[in-house]
Length: 233
Image 1 (cartoon, rainbow, N blue to C red):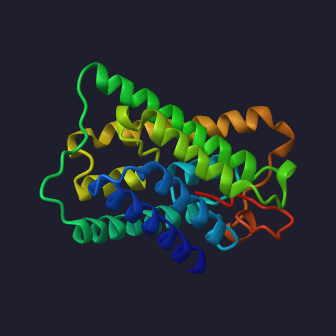
Image 2: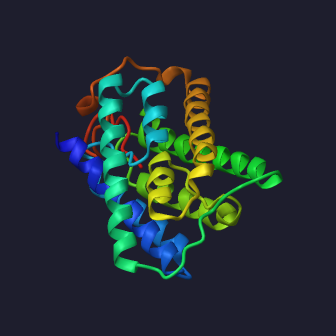
Image 3: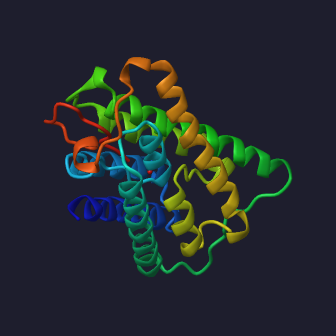
């Protein structure tokens, strides 16, 4: 139960920050988003692994550091946390007008590409810095994860909205940030990106293939012998 609560809290604050920063048109929104992800990863890593992102959970599942039952529970907690953050953020800012991100034609293809690529990058970074046996008990995993999202938000946020996270995509649609008609673009690209990241990790780290573990063992904290997956977006 504790790990599910940790996933709920982390995802809620991530989406709350995204919603309020975007709706209020904050100039430093990408920095705020990367920063809140970083601190929440550090805060929740020792409890749940701090995924806060169904695409990351999928990657950790395929990397065999999470059971299917735990993965489903994480997904529910992440979606619930994201929706809560979206509702609170929309209520707090209450903008007079919101223009939802939507795609068509070439822009749709571009959005698919960049969402897939940066979701891949995020999940790939998570697997390498937070689950690899070569980086056990490191202290830089939160920085690496947060800066990956910051880099994506700054570089391609104008192309796709920079979600890189199915929970953010769904919650952002509820908050009016993304068009419901374009939700499939995010979900497809992010799912493929997360899955490919797991395949890339396993291909590059054949020595690091482990048995499926339950969440408490697989997603352990900084002090653990096997860190599993300490993350994140």
